[in-house]
Length: 393
Image 1 (cartoon, rainbow, N blue to C red):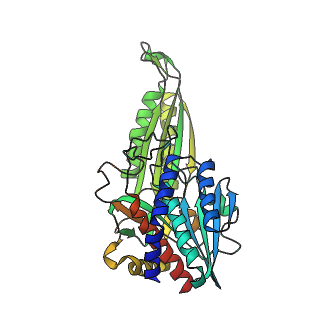
Image 2 (image 1 turned 180 degrees about the vertical axis):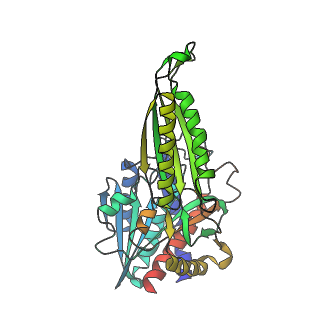
Image 3 (image 1 turned 90 degrees about the vertical axis):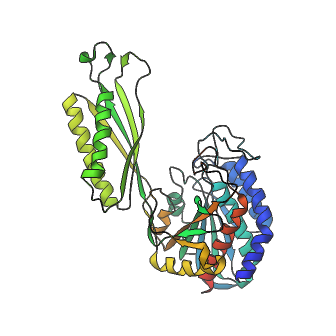
């Protein structure tokens, strides 16, 4: 079976690369993936894979039924882009101003379509059902949960979910896997400081929200170093401050934005509570007021222990043991694939794209991201292998 998957991956790679280039030229954001969804549906129609669309607005679930009854496995790809102006050197750049596939989701989508081509050709040798899930809004506000809420894990009931993400720091042809905690629970926050504006030459007549916000940012950093155990990973980053427009006017209002990352929602609770105590104390001391808005976003991504052991064995068969790296540490990024793990056993891994074509500065979410689409063959081989082995084991 491994040899069949490898040969079919080679057979369909050129078409997958063509799809990736087309998707890359038409990046769309959030749930508004109408052009992207049309490309996906057109290809599914061409291959002859039935699907349901307009799930969570633009999500799609395609179904491949094996020749024998059995379990159901879900393979997921995210489809959305980022609000970034592209500066890469590729010849198929974004045609949508201010939007770019800077996180590789164009490759995830094209790769999963390739997996569909492979599994559809092998369906007579499959026991059970494969669901190919094309998801909107991974970059925000999150498309996995609304698709789950609309029933994508039912009819038939899904027994396990698999997903992957390209990763520029990993050698091309390799993948990286991890048992348990892999990516963080993410929380975003906005703090709106309300002071009293006035002329900068008479600061004594104002309540300066800039001074208060600066104190808050400094004190927030002490939460991680002084209130959270050094044995428990946590990040609190303040990423945006906006107030006023003039050189000589102290503003009335300031808006501070940032993010919290942990692997434990209880630790996030502690951080949020401590932030609120700091804000209350500072604004009281300075005679200001505040509004603290917290958005508890994606849960921590935790790979199921038994599914990890199964996946490691299956992936070593298709790629070779030397090409499967086991991570010692998780990463502090986040992924809404984590929602699937709240309902069913799930497994997520990183696909290496680091080769001679990748420049050093080409990290994810970078305007110059440019990676070799030939590496999508790894997505195709691995997801196909996981699906078939899970269903036929």
